[in-house]
Amino acid sequence: MAPPLAAPNTFIQQHNLVEQVADYLTQAIIQQHFLPGERLSEVQLSKDLGVSRAPVREAARLLESRGLLISKPRRGFFVRALNGVELEDVFDLRLCLERHAIQRLAERYSAEAERALKHQVDVLCEAAASNDGTRRIEEDLQFHRLMLHYAGNERLLRAFDNLTHELRLCITLITNTHEAPDTIATSHFKLLDALASGQPDTCREAIDYHIGVARDFVVKGVSDTGDHHHEDVLPR
Amino acid sequence: MAPPLAAPNTFIQQHNLVEQVADYLTQAIIQQHFLPGERLSEVQLSKDLGVSRAPVREAARLLESRGLLISKPRRGFFVRALNGVELEDVFDLRLCLERHAIQRLAERYSAEAERALKHQVDVLCEAAASNDGTRRIEEDLQFHRLMLHYAGNERLLRAFDNLTHELRLCITLITNTHEAPDTIATSHFKLLDALASGQPDTCREAIDYHIGVARDFVVKGVSDTGDHHHEDVLPR
DNA sequence: GTTGGTTAAACTGTCGACAGTCGTCAATCG
DNA sequence: CGATTGACGACTGTCGACAGTTTAACCAAC
Image 1 (cartoon, rainbow over the protein chains, first blue to last red):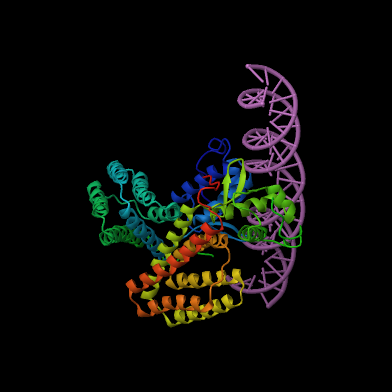
Image 2: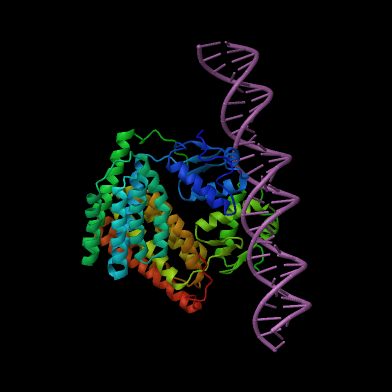
């Protein structure tokens, strides 16, 4: 039973309740106010947020489709708990999507795309320097999202956005270790160089390396902070 | 204004109403009982199916996450209408996922997987011979789903399943032209041969060709039956 | 002390109802 | 005659309530 984030009815005010509840739940899960595998009570959430159960249920369904919650019939919703295998799966799918995206992007690399990506690297570095872990992660994801965006496939982008929610879950599982801004900068500039070269194989190698590093980082972090490999409740 | 598929309350009976309503809606959309862009009235559906609006809403949200419906705030749910660009996007994403899957599968190709896939080709051919268009499509998709399954990445499979719903939408848009069973057989056996070779490049070429054919088939079918390229209501 | 059964509480799935909002159509004005 | 505005109707978003089920606790028997 995690404590509610905010006072009963100061946070939720007007319409789009579903979206607001979904945001609240997402934040609460990512910030570990709900523990993995924990059961979420609809009535409790309703009381805490000062809304009825209907929006809560719909928001929970939304989070279920995003992979943050799991519903068991007649049992309710549970916070998604990832084991080691699923962690690998998430990063493998990420690799799948980004490989495709970076190669599509290389085919249609515009000055606008290059400018936007370069700018985002600057923002990312600034975020890394600011020592705000959450912001660094968000700006990092935003860079990759921009790549997907400029790849020009709306559906590919949607698949990535879906995966992003689970990615946040993976990333925030680990202790927020600090990474030097210049390391991040060079790491991302390599992607830009590969894109500028326009060669598919170069792009593929670059993204493979980039995501491989990110994956190892998370996998290592998880096995350090405590082994989530087999302990988890993982209903389906 | 599409007529309901079944009599008011003969089809829906016991619990898991949400899933049943979702299945009903999916079938109705795929079988074109609801036209693309058409608005779905929650109350009307509730009356037709003999249930309350809550399960209908939740089912609609589910279909929205699957890309079959689109919700406009305060306006309701609309049947997804695909234009030409989105059609390309769907098949491009399919290519992305299946490329990755077939290469992963080639790395871990087991006798069991080979046996299952071969068997599915048999089933597929039988379905093609039976002249049941819907069944042929389903068995075809099932073959590809098996490939994804044996690739060993649960999340990749989920992404494919999500896409499958949209794929059905694309495929059933076109007139159900008949394809000879032996053509289908050889087409899929090429994939099996590539897998047996174990060479990534061979697999990639095979799947590129296979999906390229399927895409051209659908794209051609759409531009034949009537140009869906720009006429569609596509809110976002 | 442990195990099995029984009862009670809590929760989910579903329902009907109310309020606010949007689209439609008709009447009015320019 | 066309455009604007107003009211009407329908619909969505949200709520509280009820029924069936699951969970948990408690008591009894071994």
